[in-house]
Length: 181
Image 1 (cartoon, one colour):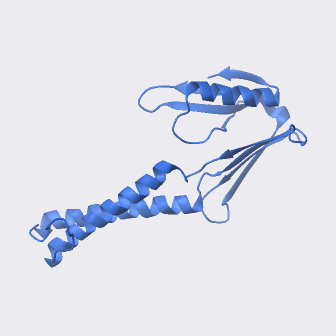
Image 2 (image 1 turned 90 degrees about the vertical axis):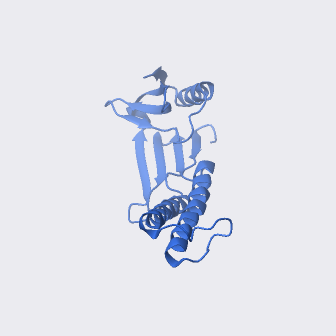
Image 3 (image 1 turned 180 degrees about the vertical axis):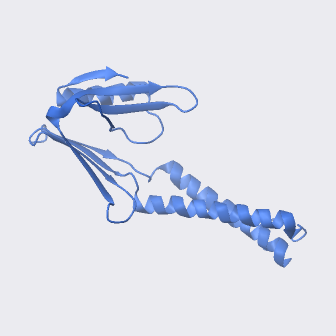
């Protein structure tokens, strides 16, 4: 039965980089907010520097704005981590002749995203590799009607050898062709 079903887990927003940015933006936002409040209330709120001498307009208000913006972004990132946005799995089932792509979205009535495709509707597995400033290395399932469904996780780009190995393993499991875009 194990040879008939393959399940690939997808890590959503619970990536190390998101944890880093959540902590970095939180600390920076708190620092900027305290600096802005120090300049307004003329009280030393930061232990390592004295920002009471800043003029509230324009320096203090800009620091308060940057602090609030930074904290807002960090709260957004923390919530996406807690809700595991984008997390899920891809299931390739030869017994039922189905491919299920399951992901978690934002809370609400459509939180669970489930896409199902018949194995008969698959034309091939494709790889897209583009280098440059924003490199992309994506594995697609190409359907006979022309649609391309991405099945690789959103993350740091995989090495080309790992991407090719993963795509060829999937194509071999599904017994279909492998192509490049």
